[in-house]
Each structure stands twice: as structure tokens, then as C-alpha cells.
Image (cartoon, rainbow, N blue to C red; front, side, top):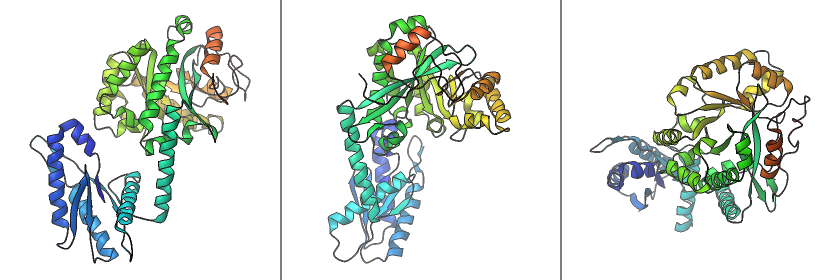
Length: 415
């Protein structure tokens, strides 16, 4: 099974005429590398199949490598050169194997190749089918979770480190699973991306976050600089009309664009083909804030900061954790902050768990922070009630959360 990588991007950006031309060229290349006894077919869309009868295992794998090389050569269209690639799944034959099973297993191997990073070949193994079944179950569970309202939002304060005033919140999604209980994002976000459900989850998070923000007019009046931070995945940002959909959701909720910051993982922008960057630039031009999330977990190339349409950089908790124990962490973090400041960007530090974390980051000039020492994620009602009264987070005793906010994490069903 041969499935073209990023074919949808070609169709969406260059049109179906260009997409058809690419498919015709790929069909010719597959036919050219196949032997006369081998059958090449297009199954539909951008998926092809090659049947190699009377070939030993090594010959089949060599064929897969020839296909990979042939498809990887850029295609010259009238207007531009298009880079292509493919993910290939191989099912080696055996006596008595049913044709339907042969194709199913090759298809499963092809999806394993895509999951491995695309542009690769994978040979079917029985455990791949077990993973596929789990993936199908996860996809079904996530679809049900959206339809049945099983997702919850928690809100963690974003605090000015110099004044302790609350200047915002991050909306964090939880899944109230009917069997497994309350699941944290790391337990299902990656799964949602893998099985193609992240768009539905992301749409729910954005819509519910904006709806909730619109219910806090008293809090917004008391905190004129309050901004709600909402995470968006690389998949979402790369979709066509992403910026338009965000603006439509803002208008529907009656929320000012300047009250929202969209946080995107740095890897999403580093590997962007331009579509995500353009969408974020248009949103930023409309007043929406844009930030890099989890800075320090990807390539962390400081040189690109000035070129991206962003306002803030959120430092990953791994950059904060060593401040208690590693003497080299402070000068390293100071250098990182200096470069970010030189790019005239705001900085938020995650993972502030102790007084020492807060003191060092404050002294180094970090603007804002999040962490259990400053305040744990809580449900919307408790956040509004508490922050609307205190508007600030006084220092806490080491090892404890700030006393002005509830000290327990979101642990059960929300009203």
C-alpha cells in the first residue's frame, strides 16, 4: 500500500487540477519501477497498491525502496515544483492468505509508516493490528466524549511575578472518562492527534473557553489586562480557514480578540510550510495574542523568534525545575530570557512550584508565571469567585500553593 504524504496540502493550496497532475505523475512512476508481472492500481484518493506475485521477501522490500525513491523526486508542475513523498505498508504473502486480509494488513502497516514519521516503509506485524484496534476504540471513545459532554475545563492563573496580580488564566482540558475517571491532557491529547480527533477536541476547547470567558464580565471589568490562554494543536493551526473559524467563534461568544492568547507548540511553527504562520499573523493583526508553548522542548532556536507572528514565549517547566538544584541553570535561563527580551516578547514561566523558583525568575526579569506555588487549576466557578475577589496571589509557604486560590486540582465532575 502506497499513500502519498501531504497530498491534501497540495490540493488545498494549488487546486484539484494540480492534485490530478500529481496523481498522474505518481501513477507513471509506480508503473515504471514495477516489473511486468506486478500490478499497480490506484485504490482511490491518493492511495495506490502494488501486487508483486512470485517475489521473495527481499525482492518485495527492494520494490518498496524503489517506490519510495521514485515518489520522493520533486514533481515539476507548470507553476512550481512540488515536493512529494509516501508512506508504504508491506504485507508479505503466505500460503492460504485471504486477499482481503492481505490488503487490510498492508493498509495497517501503511498507517504504522505514517505514524513513524512518514516517508518510511513498514512491514506488517500482528501487534500492529492490536494497536490499530486500540486506535479505533480510542477514536470512538473521543467522538463519544465530545458528543456526550465528557470534557471539562480547568483554569490555572497566570500571575505577574513582580506584583502577584493575576493577569490571566490558561484553559486546561480534562476528560471525565466514564470508566477511567478524570484524565489529564497527556493521557489523551496525543491519542486524539494520532487518531484524527484533535480537531473536534480543539474546537470544543476553544468554543467552551470563549463561552466561559464571556460569563466573567465582572472579573474582566476588575482586571482590564486579563487574557485567557488557549492551547491549539499543530493540526488545528495548519487547517484551511483556521483563522476565520477562530474569529467566528470570538464573534459568536461576544469576546474581544485582545482578551485571548492562542498558544502553539514551537515545533508546529518550526515545521510549518507557511500556512500556519500566515493564519497566526492574520489573527494577531485582528488583536488575538499568539504565544509559543512549551519553549525548550523542541529545537528552541532563538534566532527564529523575531520572524514569527508571536507576542509571548512560555518557558517549559523543564527550564524551571533545575533552579533549586543545578547551579548552572540560572545563568543558562538568564541568557535565554535576555534573548527573548531582545526580541521584545513577553515571557511566561511554567512549573513555578517553590518560593525559590519564583524569586529567581522574578529577579531575572521574567514577566509572568504559572505553577502550583501560585495557584492550581480549578473549575470555572471557583476561579471566578476567588480571583474576582482577591485579584492577586500573595506569596505562599514553600511546598504549598498560594493561599488565595484553592489548593486542590480539578478532581471531579463540574457543575
